Image (cartoon, rainbow, N blue to C red; front, side, top):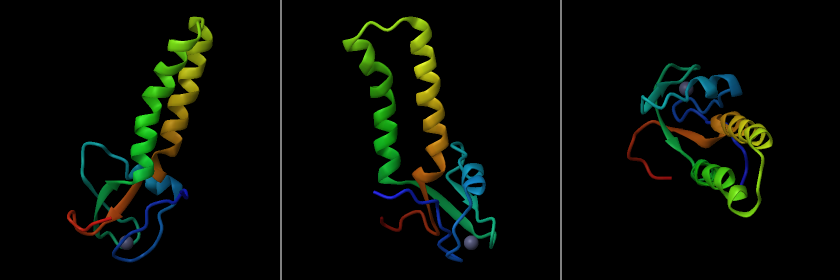
Length: 102
Ligand SMILES: [Zn+2]
């Protein structure tokens, strides 16, 4: 499993971290490539689904097994959520058409 930033399928150029972060708009299912301005559909990678599944488990998990005071838990929560947001650009990939597989 490698961490890769999304690559535009039209011009084959990879987005920078900042550009990929900007493309993460959950209300839209597509974005425009910052290089060639081609419409690109934003799809979630397998890696993204793993992280999305892992985050609630990481938040709820420790509470089931150990007694954590509220303050350390809140700090932990901030670390988990900020890590999640920092990884967002790596969770998506671009496709020129919505239906193309993988
Ligand atoms: Zn492009």
